[in-house]
Image 1 (spheres, rainbow, N blue to C red):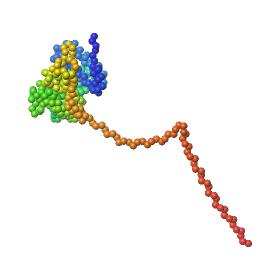
Image 2: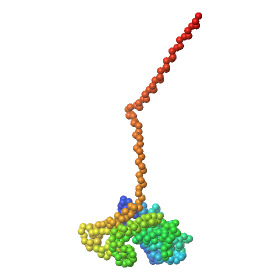
Image 3: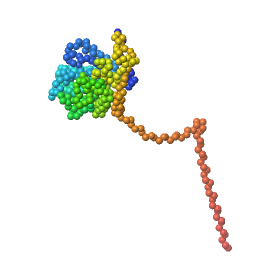
Image 4: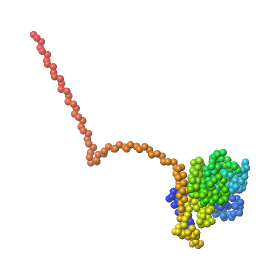
Length: 393
């Protein structure tokens, strides 16, 4: 009986701002991993499938909706690429379920939201491509998966893009994921997205997450030979906003210029620092509380230690203010501007047209042409010759 909530106001504002929205549908692990599905209640599965269809139908009709992300980072080795390093990897019941779910749900979304993009967001682990390009279904159901085709071929037939989340800190690191050097072959049975052997099955690439923290955290795994430290999640954290601005311009520019054949676009991670994840109010000391294009500060002189939330009443007012990281924003803006081709030169100006002949007033008739001159008078006849003299007697 509760009122139905929609995303219409958000999408309307995105459209007014000229923004496109890629809708993430957070289907749980039971929809992708066979071992989790076996213990799931049937109503959970049917509910999520109905939510997927309803969401695609409702949001897919909005002009601001670019497309849909079916899944985020559920691509573990056991379900997505077991035995990838083997010369001839084989499909398993788990990989049948994983890739079959992808095909099934992509088709469902396409029926509900025709004309919108469909794909997923994986880790930047190249082993899945090496496995899926060589392995075929073990027990195809004939509906989602068919016999005689690799997993990659069948995924490519259902998806519009391949998305992956990457936090590479150099063009060389991005090259290993997207490039074609060395045939795109990666140790451990992997293939890069740019591998020539799978060029006819690769969809355009969306960097569904890319970003760099500037919390200054240097604890954790040492990054030999680099100025970057790593947080507990293994993601590089730089000491300053200026360093991140330089890194963003370098890596993003390489993504668009060196891999233009594959690149569809980028989603920067992320809009605002997730400062609520920090261990204290005064420090940006965690990996995800320092990735933002914007930070925050307390409003109306409230101390930084002041409570964020009042139990039972909601957020404490006045709300915090967004603070732009101007160096980072400008670096990304300049990088994108450098990729935009200049407008074509203006054509040479034409000479102004000749003025039209004057048009007579309607009350004044066109002037009559002057009469032709009279013909010239004929020349007078020559005088008559005198008569001849009479002959002499």
